Image 1 (cartoon, one colour):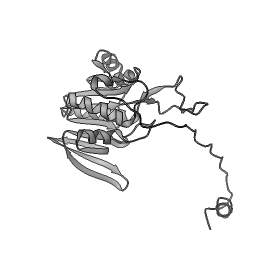
Image 2 (cartoon, rainbow, N blue to C red):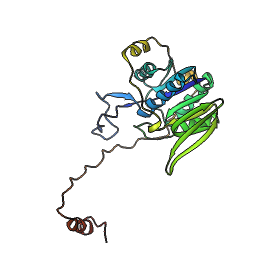
Image 3 (tube, rainbow, N blue to C red):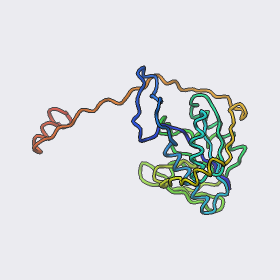
Image 4 (cartoon, rainbow, N blue to C red):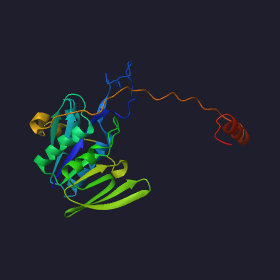
Length: 250
């Protein structure tokens, strides 16, 4: 069985994001970029399934500028077999990404598609669900455990009330949550091997997809500065401040 994993290039989660002076976007100049953490979890899960003998091939795909190939090579170093880069200008919206992925799925016919549940830049949590709808395939979102048996996959999902276990038929779409696994580090020999693994470059035109962006970014604001806290000397003083200053007690 083939597994297709989608990955996205984002600002490294350890970097403090800066907003441009004109507030049109975040500042990407000289900023460290990395694979979206949830996408990294998706890659790790695919590699583990291959190590268990469930998968025969892992294909990793990324959509965006040429620099996205860095993240594809990272995924190849972690254990993926080959990469596909769909080169685009700018950042397509979730629906455009889902349409491009759907075309690749139609070509490759993977038994399982794994995505991160969301990207830490846009935070949309939409692409996996849209892809499942376009392909008319079963979906299991927010996965914290994945077990593949024969032609079905059992997924333990994280929901507001706790955990929910569902079983869906293959082929299916899965989105990875934070507690699905702990991603490994790529070893130096695997990083060197990844440079020789195949990486195909495609364009939206070759796939027959016309990109459109239905979302307009109006402005970006940094979070408001938090005021420093104070220490109180007694419970009575705390209650007094909550009641008379914060107005949260009556």
